[in-house]
Length: 341
Image (cartoon, rainbow, N blue to C red; front, side, top):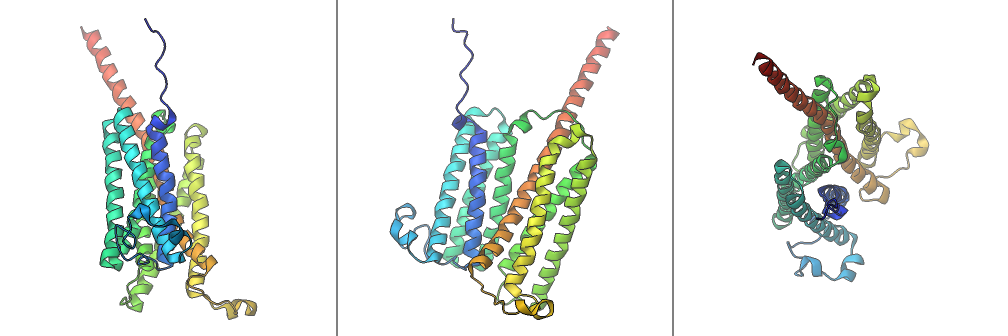
């Protein structure tokens, strides 16, 4: 008789490995996609799903690497998106084979459908040369990133081993509100990034004011969350400290990038601030200008992912508490019934 314990699965046979791999590669995909928008390179490759008549994966490497920068980032965006799709397929296979949670298996399949849908949006943007589809494609990327982040967190040790500590229900509502506000801010930012040429100046300024108002709301909610977490006892505070600190860091980074994005796009009255800065000239596709604008967009996606992290940490512990309370209630009823007998 073989009494040895089962051999533990390799890390590449664990859903968490594939879920984190998808999440980590979606973020640079958003970065490259942002560069495509910043450099207006969406039509650098005029056909799809091929590249200038070649199969996507057989396009000459030298032409891609040493060609125009617009071609480099657009074709690179397609290749990276295809790689994310392959990783998502791997996640689905491993989850269906090795994860016993039915909902998680179907959620992984849902992520695959979301990635495919995002790829189709990118293709339709090229085939139809439609700016509105480009805006939808730009909003879809961060949402896929948030979805992948959720699946990575749901496969983590913290999710599996979350204790039954109680969290105030108001904290969960505040974290959920933060996630909703971050998504709304994403949509407003996409409207500004892909503003149509026929948009009147009053409409553009209305979008700017809405974007700034939502930035203020996000700032207040994140500060309130961080303050609330630090008021909790250490046993409750410890698992929430990571996402709270991450949200604060991303907030200050995003506020700085937002101000810098306005400066490199529309400048400021430099002569009133300092005559020495009046010589600054806006370069729409300059090196630092491109990094700042694209970084502002990517950091917004990161804020959504950090909001998902906070919601998962709070909601998971409340779910555990409810489950344990329910099991305790059933046990008490059984004890009472046995005593009555």
